[in-house]
Image (cartoon, rainbow, N blue to C red; front, side, top):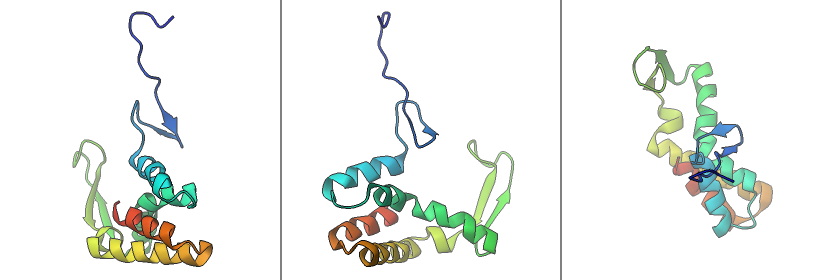
Length: 123
């Protein structure tokens, strides 16, 4: 039925094609669902992606800088010059605390909020 060898089907989740691998924020979100089962899966998946969701807005506002440099890397032609508000370690901790506080305010679940804060920082 499968010929000589069987290979696992490719995985396409949320528009992210990665062959047999799943995109990292999805892995983190699903893993956190085991330790915080009452938390929203959407929040657990969005948390490690939060800094990347904020970054384009900070670029548009002119708070962070990137330039186009073809050949800079094999993956993207962007050269990231300065992004201290979205991706520095100190600000990642601030964003994590902010997202955790927001989750407590919206859902009232402190244990889940702690995991969401850690997920933001884990970016």
